[in-house]
Length: 44
Image (tube, rainbow, N blue to C red; front, side, top):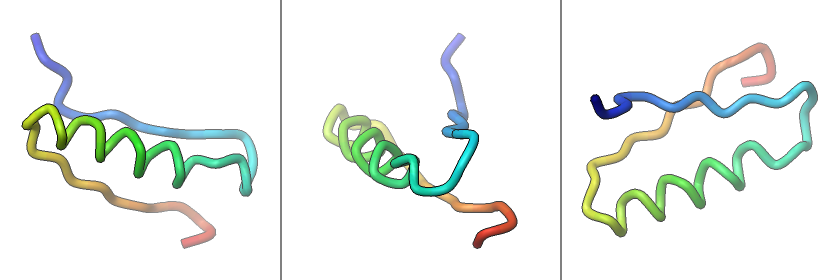
């Protein structure tokens, strides 16, 4: 069974979640997968 979603989290702001997410999305897209990103939370 393939994963349909991935959640990236960290205990505080400024820990690099956005950078990791962008890199992961790009790597998956280069493998031919359809990807989408979304941001949510109290600081958005």
